[in-house]
Image 1 (cartoon, rainbow, N blue to C red):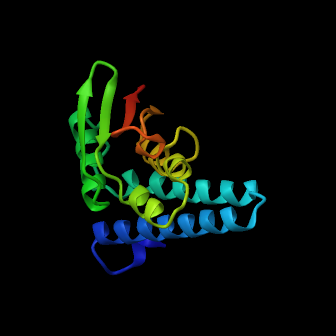
Image 2: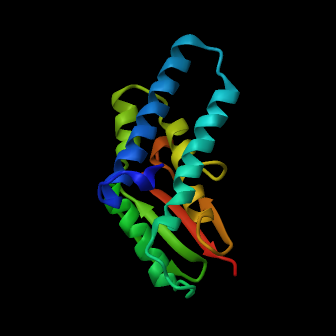
Length: 166
């Protein structure tokens, strides 16, 4: 559905992800107010974020079957973070691509709305069904994704590692 909107791709992505982020935060705020926590609904939101992230690499320009280099993969993430207004850096190490986020608008909004920061971090960047896990799994090759430090749990930055397996 997102590909049919007649607006620039980066604007579509920014609006789609922020819309999902707002829905998730509203949902979490309502859960905190009403209790008990609805695990099935939480899984649905997590899956929606995962599938949205999973589409990001598919929206990239056609590479005519060529393999992506690590430098190109880093640029994909840099582009994603620019679109989402997330101050970050990405680099290559012997363990794969390391991404460091210095600012997260989703977490900032969650804290302003008094919604649980750790839960937002888990849904957007966690190791299971999260937006970032979806992006890593959306590449046309096997990857291993691992979330590390998170600002929602009190760390100064958020870190993620993506390693290409094939």
